[in-house]
Image (cartoon, rainbow, N blue to C red):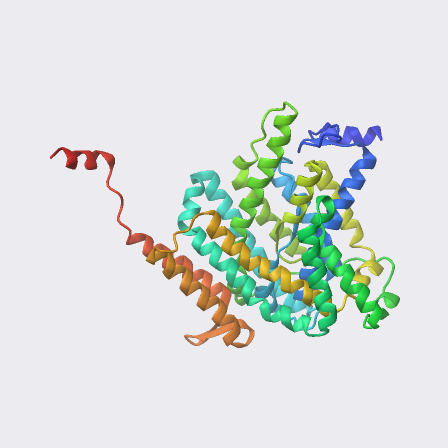
Length: 454
């Protein structure tokens, strides 16, 4: 294994003692590296695959894209931020409006996937631009355009707009759905340690076992699938409708990615302090982190994968195990890419009944909406300010009302059909900027002092 050690050293990493935990620039022994990487792969897998099954994207391609995008994220962040890139739930409604996915697990036509890819690729440039602005001008400039009352509202809209999809899936078999929900919630609330970071996996397993007992699992896809197969890659197809629907969703993922970065900075520096090491300036790399997210979206969709973000599931696992090693994240990425070539494996995923995923989605989609509330609470948004209320109120009604009032969430207006979530986001940005102009600037200390002396 000396060659492996030489490989990591050439990349700028150093050996570490994982008994106390691993810092971002440290790597474990080869055996432990594989075990830690497999754990990271298992943690990200259920949610990443679930997005593909709900949007009509190909499972194997999505898994491959998550691994490759993570490698690109590591390269962009210069191997200093230990975060894994996985499929984002925030984009599901917007992508489905393009792919037309209605039947759980059924792949959408390549042409429609290609259109969604085009929208996702351009959405990546939103994150890159936000990252560049932060690097160039500071985070305050982004907050001016995207204040927490706006990003929080959009997250709420995204979560609630998916409620119908979750309930339709759950209605397929209520017994299976309720067991899935119950086990997922119980695991997330009562289990501790590493097991407490796998509620999605436990929920799927419980629902699947009950589905087997009820005889509603179809194994035909597994018997006909090849043992090895190349993932189904698709090419982007230019579509400005897809851009309008998908691109604005990147706005909602920026605060989520920012929160994850600050969390990992806190955990890493606590370990560094305990071991007497110098602090790691991870929080100072917010701009680079958002650029990495944007690049991840772009390269993921070049192959036919959905949009993504850095994963809280992986972050939580690192916090519990105190293994923040970037080499472990790299190894997990490679494992994901290798697994994507196992045809039987991808086919087995497609045997999960829609009622299992529907039950799981009731919980997960609700969490997205609650995170929107959390953003506003964390940032102490003033809900008694009329300007703030105007932004929140109109964004919620346009986004949620438009999603449920019109087929496909497309609002008929001015001779066109406008995607509800994207329209709500663009409206919120414009209204916020206009209202910002009406705010009175606080008097400077010098002028205030002068008035006091008269």
